[in-house]
Length: 243
Image (cartoon, rainbow, N blue to C red; front, side):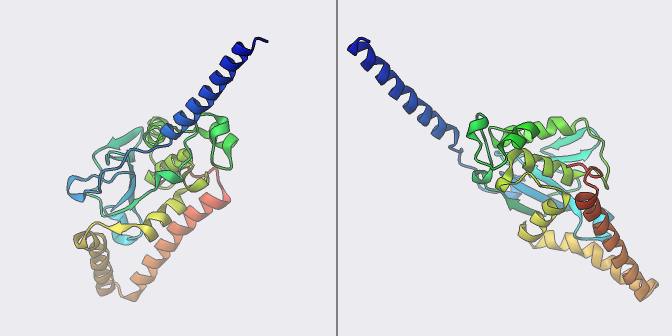
């Protein structure tokens, strides 16, 4: 081989490696997010929650959830074959929890997975950006029928987080999505707390005044039945619930 030609090939190889490294670093740089602005209903990369009419009056830990794009626009599965965009169903956001994009897996190829289940993640449907993962879930749920007990807004969020492989997990479901917003969510303001719990307090007081303490026992039984249904469907009969 001609020495000059060898040097040229070697230089080309070094350039290619540097270019790949540079490209990879660019692809994994995230655009800075705008600050959370409840007044403008902008919650970049957040899970958001609001109470449901009637349902939350009886069980205040149950509500409607959505997820937000990088620009803060809210997305929520609010009906059969329909995902709301920038129009959060059932009222303004009461609670939110901002997620960390650094905890997502955005592979450019199978070898670029940083999660432990690369092949499974590829089969499920990977995303190269936050918004790309959310858009894939939107397309999937635009062909799904809404059902409060088997395929609801929590199912949509779980699907999004699984596509993002958030926190290195592809086991997101209705239960751990609800727990995430319940235990890590921040209230928007004091009025959000009031509108989330005041109807429940009023219902309890009226129920006790009209029926007595058996009303409280019945309300507790209803809550336990609801929790039992979702736990059973999620962990015991996995094909029962959508996620």
